[in-house]
Length: 490
Image (cartoon, rainbow, N blue to C red; front, top):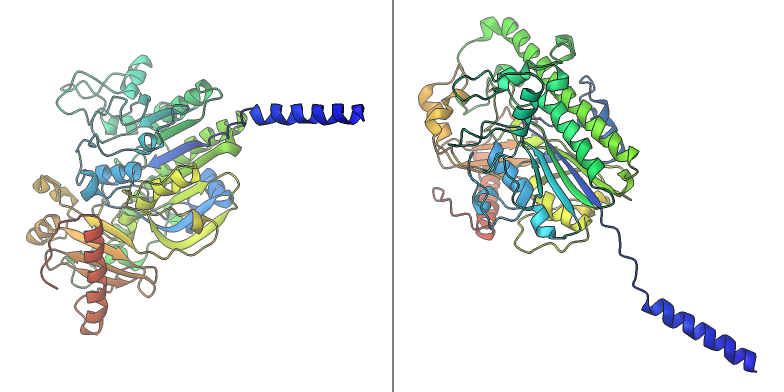
């Protein structure tokens, strides 16, 4: 009997001991966020392009989650970046056009997580003010651009200093800086891409056992459309659809260049081949960084995001840059590899506005009600996406300097009007896309029947009811997000 009491007493002591032990803290997931610039959606095999050489992006898509129809919030640099970092639309976070500082009260993902255990770093292009400084929740800042320092011409990027250390001299005598054209002529070993890759690997070596949030922001494949892999892709690999030789109805007038279409077509193919070379350049560095995660044994606890701040027209309808609502400018790749999630293709239409809520959800964080997107974790598990996507366009403050975005064939007055126009866009899950303009340049496309956006249905009386319904959805979204832009009466 005494032995039974003794056994019971020992068991009781063990239970008390285990109850007093602190539970082991769940290991926070790491985040590797890879952002490119001017990369269209159709630039890897997961998005249907099997001619471009992107083995690492292809592998990421095969083993991860591919959002097949992903859109930016605004197809230009600073506003898109601000939304990607904050989960707020440009009209809300205050960065409604290029070269505006991200306000202090617009919190980035690291600031929203606010966990002192995390090591945080941002490497590469920032374009949201204080280009060379660590701020907005990033403890470490490694810069790559000299062009966004404003009036301060005495400081240069880390990439600038790296080139000097390797024997290069700045080509711009006035500013003593390296131009993008100069950098684009360098061998891959001294490219911005390789610089960011090197710094990322060094950073991963330095964090030790700490969880981290590491953002890599590559300039490529942004213009200049030039790099060390210009000749990697033959022009015969490039296929151009009919949208490169015409404009949709009710669009800007098209000058007759059809007599030169064969010479024009070959020139566009050469530009595509060089552009693909820049995408391949990024792919190489993406592969090196992902390999480093494996070498360190942390790939199974790291969320990997790959996306781009916006796309590029590349002469679709004759336009060269972005600042458009067309799919080629507004749609981007968005792939993720998430621990314990099966690979999947998400066909539903989603937006960058959903990025921050999704990452907070995956990282076990509360999603603030102030955020304007929705977590897509349910879609990553196979459930349907049931909300529309909204985009916006606010004209450049100095719109007159943006006339270079106008194609050669455009009438100047029409192009000026387009550059001064505000637009709000809705893309529904069943494929309707309305670009509602404050001028008379509104557009309605059925993306299911007209994926090239060649047939503008806006002036067709048959679709008046559809247009009014979509406008009401835009107005409701405006109310929910405090967007004060006024349109002409419905």
